[in-house]
Image (cartoon, rainbow, N blue to C red; front, side):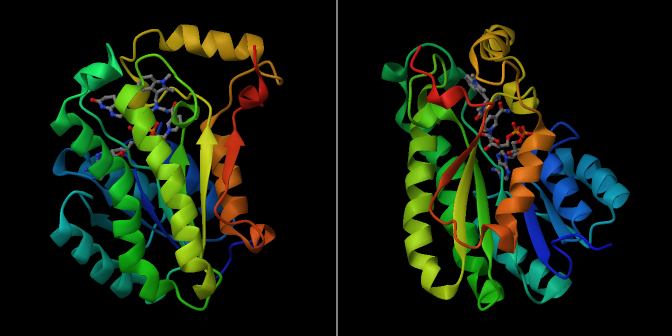
Length: 257
Ligand code: NAD
Ligand code: IMJ
């Protein structure tokens, strides 16, 4: 009660399990009073997401593989039915073939490039466009998750780095498109977090150690810290911010060496 997101409705894409950044965002938004709808990408994840969603007391749990136009259409219908109106979208979805996340970017296949862009980038305008009619006239906020590999070379991040660069550019173009309709669009560039998407990444522990040694705050960040910035960006406290990439990375991005 009394949270700064009371009376608002949010849609969260990207919960896979309790480690997901999307799940930390869900908890932070809910804590501040937002009503939530969660999506699951496939039947394999449905049970997991239902269990988590019920535990948090969400209003709806809806299927959405973002590569499917018909599931995206179904999502609008589901969100419309659950809420009528929508204030916030959290897009925390990314995928590339595992073989593209090792070796060189030079060797990226055409299909691997297409898939990474389709799931990790095109899904943002695709979801946003469909939700705009539900979001108009109410200080809406659209958020996505990025990584410093968008701007600088992180070994093995490869095709995902190029996808995140396109995602951050998409945030700017969408902010320009939707600003006149009162909808803000921003990205959070998160430091590394041990989630399903980080599992099995070669040298991930060494990357965490490197950040803890080098970042200004001399530590890694938590998913909860990303969730809190998500709540801020979703709220009227951030009403003057759009088209931006905000870093939640213990300050690592400022370092030159
Ligand atoms: P995660 O594996 O928990 O989340 C990724 C989500 O993408 C999963 O829920 C998965 O179901 C979903 N997804 C994949 N393909 C999909 C599809 N076709 N349709 C719908 N959903 C699909 O991992 P995470 O680390 O929480 O990732 C969330 C976001 O955060 C991603 O955009 C990721 O790039 C970004 N990010 C992660 C880190 C990190 O270190 N973990 C750092 C910076 C940014
Ligand atoms: C991913 C690959 C390589 C290096 C990486 C990462 N580093 C970090 C990540 C240093 C932090 C995690 N990250 C930021 C992502 O965006 C991950 C996306 C991702 C992960 C997988 C693994 C499993 C799979 N496909 C994936 N697609 C996207 O099959």
